[in-house]
Every structure is written in C-alpha cells, then in structure tokens.
Length: 94
Image (cartoon, rainbow, N blue to C red; front, side):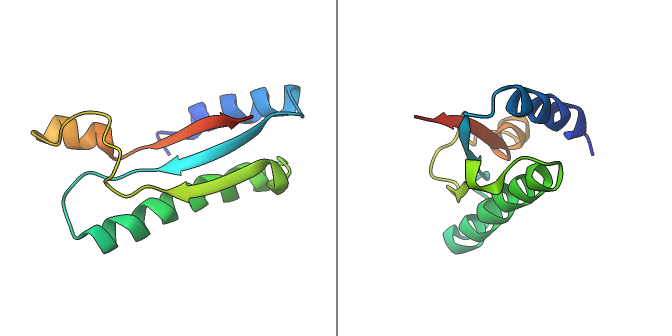
C-alpha cells in the first residue's frame, strides 16, 4: 500500500506515453537463500506487472524479471541498507 501513490504516477506516465515499454525489476536483500531470494524477487516484479496491467497498461509493454540479491542498491551491511535493497525498479526498454 505504501507504493500505491508511486504506482499511480507510473500508470499516468505510461498512459501518456503509449510507446514506452518497461522492464519491472524485483530485488531482495541478502537474507535467505539465493533460491528463495530469486523467487521472491520474481514475485515482487510480477505483482507490480499485474497491478499495472489491471490498471489498463497493455501487458505486452511490461516485462517482469527477478534479480534476487544479485544487484544491491547499497551494501547489505545494516537493516536500513537491507530495506533499500528490497525494492522494485522500473527501467525503460529501448
């Protein structure tokens, strides 16, 4: 729910730019096994993809991919940093 305002913004941008495609990237912190984190990151990305599609964004414009813990935004050296690594990013696809 905390991400809904951001997703509303994303929906508005995508509706105004129908030619834009995005890769929805799911990420995790380093706690848990590699396999668990991979699945979790995939579920995160798929959840956002589903939300955007349900809001009227053509699913063919949306690619979901999980990266597990392989691409941390910051080192997993503190609880605050780990929280930053539990994220979903949207990147344009060219």
